[in-house]
Length: 275
Image 1 (cartoon, rainbow, N blue to C red):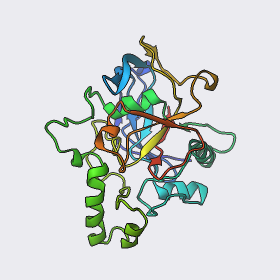
Image 2 (tube, rainbow, N blue to C red; image 1 turned 180 degrees about the vertical axis):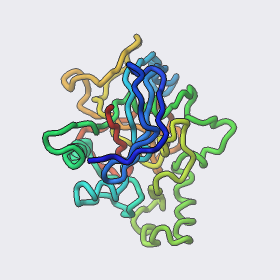
Image 3 (cartoon, helix red, strand yellow; image 1 turned 60 degrees about the horizontal axis):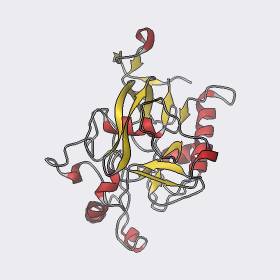
Image 4 (cartoon, one colour; image 1 turned 30 degrees about the horizontal axis):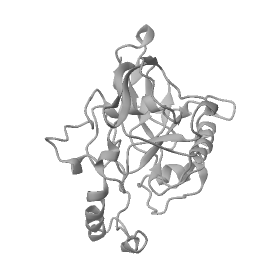
């Protein structure tokens, strides 16, 4: 399977042997990925997720520019479990277990049943590193100077925008009758991206990560991949907040978790593609 590639080639600092990555890659079903360089950052945030600790990521990776859309999920599985159905909305009502099945099917589609298993969920550290994009405050933008509504869908703006979408014919008015709050998820990529070129890392829908939930260490960690199940609560991490949460739940460091079989109208997924 041949990937679509941009003409520009970049060499991100820290790659072994001068390794080069594409500025962007697009897979067989149209999912777009951006390269994330290796590096280190302070994971967590005071009063949000503590202890704040240093994390070193030694390997570059690609991550989805958007959350997985309903069209992409349906192209792989033939089903659409989302409550609000539209091809460019993020898929929702998917459990961590469902995501593993989707990933397995996607890898088979791209690389063959005996081929590479490059697509996966991001680790929690990869997710926060990609979200922050070198920022150190609550969000990847300056929320004290800039308008929150330009960067994330949250409880206070998702209802207002629904009215606008109905007027423009983007969504069907019947959705008002489904959600008592009048709030809905929104098409991916409509707000401002971070410096890595990633959209909706704050708000819209939560995104599953690979890790089991566990308390943070205080010491520096390298390429953390989560803790074995028997040592932690039996819950998997998801990140990013949603259209049904207040904006603070979308902070870069905010954590939440549920059992792997949990499904909710505010939980979706974004994929990582290993090098």
